[in-house]
Length: 212
Image 1 (tube, helix red, strand yellow):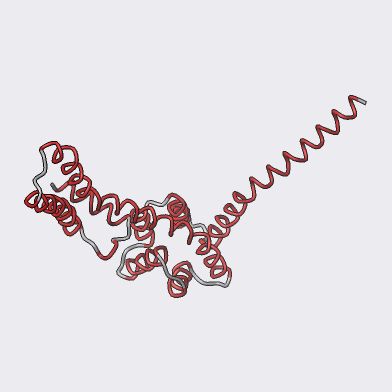
Image 2 (cartoon, helix red, strand yellow; image 1 turned 180 degrees about the vertical axis):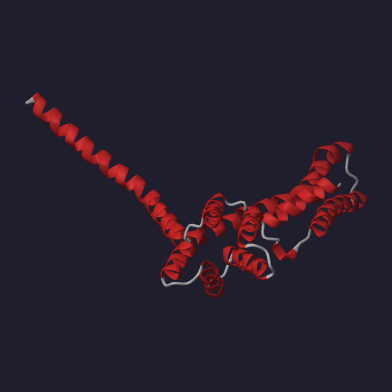
């Protein structure tokens, strides 16, 4: 069905199209896994006949499991792909900040990062630059990147850059603000912990003075 094929195509995209796999190949793989499992047990039954109960309780569930094994593999690849993007994002922001502070434009800074790094995030930004070079607006290319990954942290960065372009705000300022916000978010639990400890100590001292 077309709807299912579109769903598979979307899931493969979110996994970074592992091994260059297309939707058609993926569905063929699912069918072959199920047919192969059924064929294996059919061959076994020729040598040693299997009871109807064995077919119903063991063989049929295994055939169904084999049919969905590629889906489980794809879900795992998608999770790994998104995690790799999340892990690479902070370093990318650091390098982007250094580049824009040095006077590079946004596209130039991204191109430098793509040249000097590897991995899913670098590949996605490389594809974004290719779209820009092909005539796609930067905002649309960034939106396409967000659609290909669906990583909330990356989507937040992209949304900020797109809005900066709409309102004419310097991209460099936006990048610096995002980095500052990330640092503040990372330090907030520590700050709250220190405040809680100091507050607890102060409260204990106050109670001690009251009881004396």
